[in-house]
Amino acid sequence: MSELIEKLAETVEGSKKSRDITILTLSTCMWCKKCKAWLKDHDVKYRYVDVDKIDFKEKSKIIDYLRDTYQSRISYPFMICDDEFVVGYNPNRYEELMKSGGN
Image 1 (cartoon, one colour):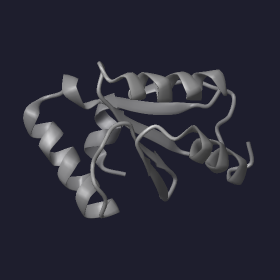
Image 2 (cartoon, helix red, strand yellow):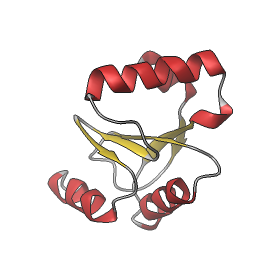
Image 3 (cartoon, helix red, strand yellow):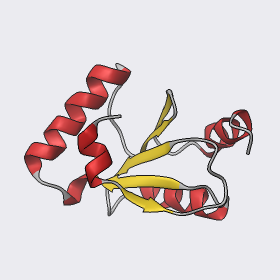
Image 4 (cartoon, helix red, strand yellow):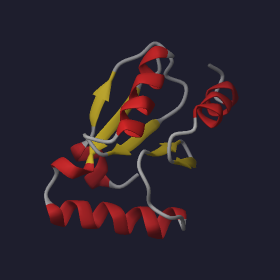
């Protein structure tokens, strides 16, 4: 994971810690809020970065990193779960990832 994302991410504690989860979100995005609520409701530990609240240069670096690493369109929320990722709000996929991670 990018050192920049690690530096900027805020941690939300939860009892389910078997997966390394980071989400990139927008603070005003309804779907991003739903993603955070889903993780909280399922007591999952995760980190997040509200990319609309960081410096423009840092935001550009993060977007370039996501494009280069995941070869995907960038949409929010963008969840990175270990070596897998989910673009957009997708609770069914989140559930699959949690089950495959032993939670």
